Image (cartoon, one colour):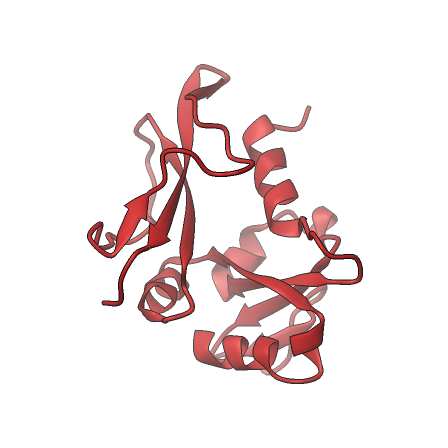
Length: 163
């Protein structure tokens, strides 16, 4: 059985509103290798893996870039500029830090998991004077969700000013 939260995640990052468009999904190398390979490549998506050590894009990835700025440039210049609808950053931690600094980072889609887990990677702290939570956002459930006894809430933060 597919988890509802994971299905929501996949539906969100692969959803496009204009026919013929695709989303760019930006992954750090470790994040990419931790994703279930059987699900790759995802539909409506061009996968960009960021790495300073890889020499070629890994299996199922479409592009390899050294840093987030290179991925943004790739997505915003021909031939991809006319194809790309949204750039989604999937992770990991360093990619998130670089993304939060970028002026094009306008929205943060986060899942607030209301439980403690033994983890080694976390979403970085961010300035909540720059990004404000949106109490209501189209397509995002506003109520607390629960799955297998774990409560969580989807949240969207919008950039309201520059850093």
